[in-house]
Image (cartoon, rainbow, N blue to C red; front, side, top):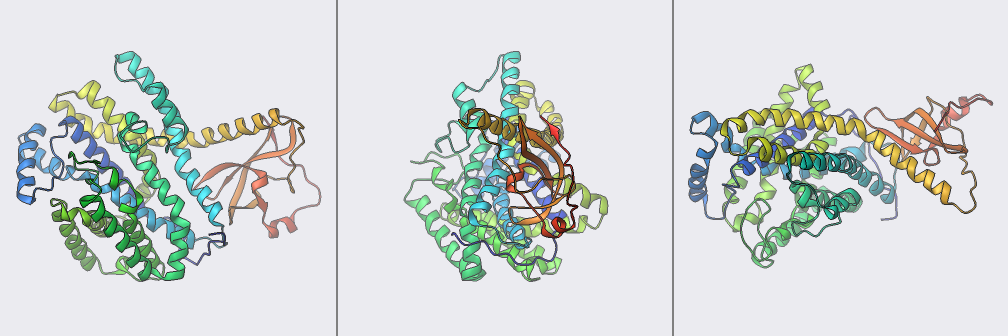
Length: 482
């Protein structure tokens, strides 16, 4: 995988509002699911005992959430909110293809992995670094749970620092089991993109489907596992289903849908009526399959596809209202931080305030949904500062510890307003420039491409040729000394 990742044109670089809408709805669905499980003390999760038995178990569990019909109608679909996790995986494959096809210039596999990992890790680190002091203070004030020093170290360093045994990261926030899975897909994404272009969409889809079905069959019948949302006692519990192999075809399906969409083909180009009916059929098959052990082999492949098909139709229609389209586009950008934070919110809210009070539970639900969104916005707003501070600290430490300090010079001097190339994209604009310690010729630049704002070293940037030619021969760069 040493060759550059080739790119192709995409109809539009504009963010898809309905896509962001699905993301934020999925994040809210996961929050509601975990809140309901925690309040009812895990009264129901799908079991491989057939549809009739599962419906009976739901009927027994539902009174804990209220005896009226409205409470039952609201709580019933929330029991299955875990399905949104696989929606995130499918959308990750979809976005991978859109992002790569929208690039005008090639980027190496190494550069892509680095960029993708940082997009996963910086939000995670921001949430972890900000959350641990808050959790500790809440624990002191209420004489309740405080993360242990080892849990704090594991969560604040690297999210692979735990075994899939329910420890380390899970001791802080249970939903964080998902982060190593996302990292796994980031690491194999260049290979999947290469194979998509080399083998074609159909062949890659068939091969990935075969691998996933074979692995999931082994996970059910030979590895002693159960699907992640089913609370059963099996030899290896849910660990076999945490591997990316169990979700590989879901990710590739997202890639295939995006590839067809870029060529104005595929399900997203169907008529709404057809998309809804096919989506409902696929979802119904997956929904029924999850109640049988044999169905575990295929249920997680069908459920996200059906959900996304139906959601696309509904959210596309809402996007015809400009204000809703704008709102979905903005809220969707916070979905990842929302997911990272929601476990803290529901755990502290239900254990410290709601406890076993039914009316407090229903009052707290909208408060937790909105409150988590506010915290996600705060975390996303703080992330550039955290990233910049960490980068600056590293550069300063490196400068102080270098045995023979020499000014690390750039081949050009940045100016505010410069159009620069970064990681193969030429759409970045320099907004701010700072120097590090006494290194007068070493610059730290804040760059933006409209959707993202980053602080990076000027050494990782290059001036777009057309602008370099237009520059005057002498100039004074704008600098802020740190």
